Length: 69
Image (cartoon, rainbow, N blue to C red; front, side, top):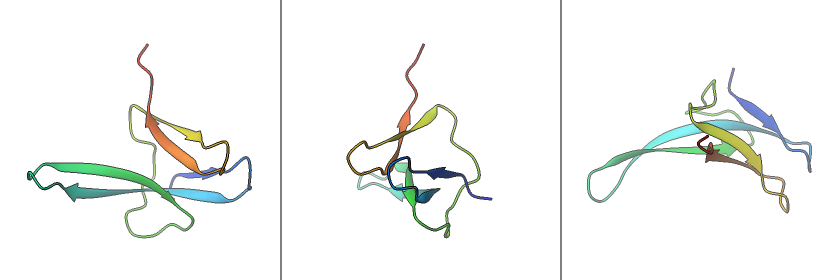
């Protein structure tokens, strides 16, 4: 089951996805994003060191690195 978050503003459910992207210099990075439906690349858990926040204006979920303590 894909990791999901329900928007507090709109009530819509969003699913977390990941994708590997190769940059021009040859470095590979992992991109995380939310989508309205679970599709290819949906992941089951929140990546370590990340947390979910929500854009107050649009209600869209955002994934950001956790603050170090």
